[in-house]
Length: 133
Image (tube, rainbow, N blue to C red; front, side, top):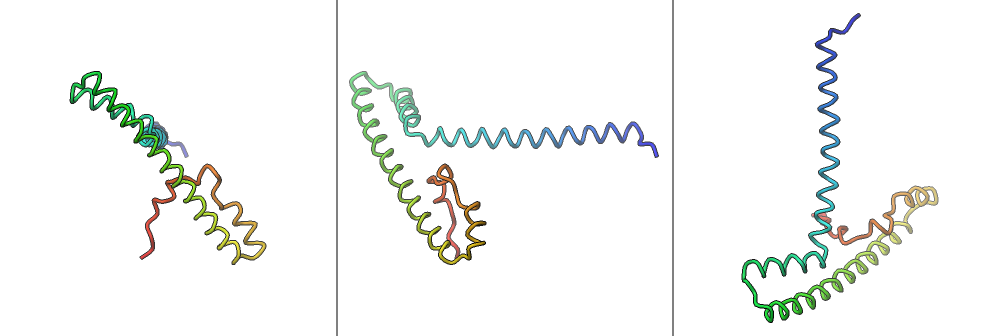
């Protein structure tokens, strides 16, 4: 049974569309993740805030220096809060994992080790979980 030329072309075009959509989705996800990291990076926020204030308020040089000092101080505080939150989040996750581990059989423990989050996965993003009602 021969497949018609039109069916082959349609199949190839459909495959190209599917592959392009998949690759576009992956690229979009990666770019969005990178943008979110930059948006919540305190150093980037520092630059963005200063540029915005300068552009909209036409600051004088003395104002700019004093405002930059205030922004720098705030950024340092935000970094400390972020680091403390990540540390506390990790402690909570480790306590949770210990509680889960104590209820498992040896076979389940071996399987659960593969499911446990890595150090890199233990970030502040873990706080974005909705509690069960």
